[in-house]
Image (cartoon, rainbow, N blue to C red; front, side, top):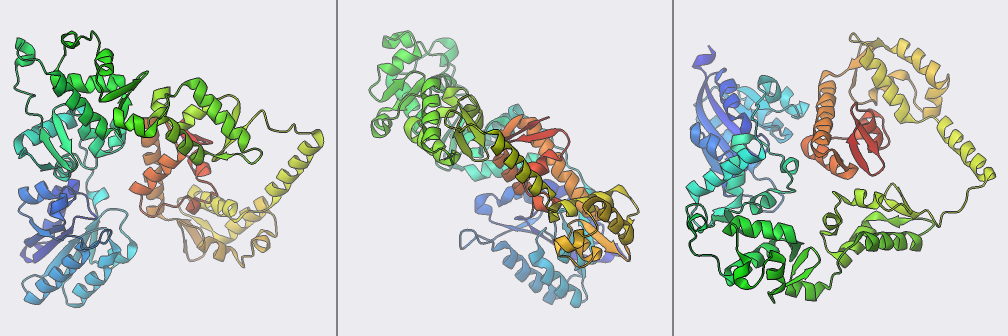
Length: 537
């Protein structure tokens, strides 16, 4: 009976999210009694959110630090423990919770020893590991954790946690791990912050020094703001502004600085310092330099001698750079670096744009193509003869058969029929579309060999159909893209590509027969990739 079996539950915290903790325990318990329950990770860095699930479910946390940066030592610690438990002879089987193929050899060895091996992991788990287990459960199929959160909920949770655990040096990683264990993987970009530390910096109640966080003791229970008690001194305000600007690379927008000061001290009466407005107060402090709506630390301003950016100045610089690099066009990355050196890292937001691409589109005298900027004024006129030549060359290129186009057609034909399509029928369809000699042009010997090179398509006997896992993976990617575009409305293609690769292991758009990432995106309903950016269609 399954209930009589004694099992060892071993969890790799580096490869499985803590949000699945309850479902893992429920699934593992179906196969027997959990005599051992261990989770492996670097607990000094928060254990990837497993701290609280381990504490609340009697799972023993096993510390394994990385001796070399970038190297994962958790796998080795888990494998050594598994072999130690095997040789004690106290268990009938093992439950290995991981999405890492590195455990394939361990699963095989445990099976050879006559032990039952159960695997639990996410859909991304490689086939070699799943095949080496007696049973394998996909977390994405046995559970769908739905923890809803918004920025207000996260802020309340952070303040409550820091209040309860503030020891003067609360590690930033512990706060991140607490939120992960409670809400799963949080997309901080969606609430307007490019990283977790920036989110923490936005709290007026908290003070961060490198990786340590503490409460601002003057806040919370301080009733001076309400009862007309002691107002902050000029030196205290200057100290708070200085600390804030240091975290912002020495400069930030005046309104943001004033908002931060108000969050720390409440409404301040600047007339006590001979200034009716916050801007005048800043102007009177030798520690700061103000240029229009930007405040800088005096030493930062002296060191960088950065200029205040205006729309006209920005347009002139972009136009000048484009002219200097005609006819081949100037590199956008190099242009952005030159502008940051001149105006500072926040020049795009100072101009009122969300990103670099949007700022460039405001300059009507230049043209953006791929990663280059061209001057419209310096482009030579195209003669009728040149246009005809260009049209002919495009037709010739279009007529050349591309392997990617054929592969994509194979996927389309395989996906259109639930029962699959026979190889002869597929060959006939491909000949009708690409010509009788398409295999010869591609230098491929047979239709079967062609199909074997197409991702997501499997051959069974004399027919083929789409791989179910490939279809599910494709649907997951498409949903991920739509969700990302819905949240950000308009973003760069590079940012979207990085987001997909971060969430989908081994993602490669060429698997779908596309030569460019933008073509892959345009094939997804509801979104559109246009040049440098992606937006909702």
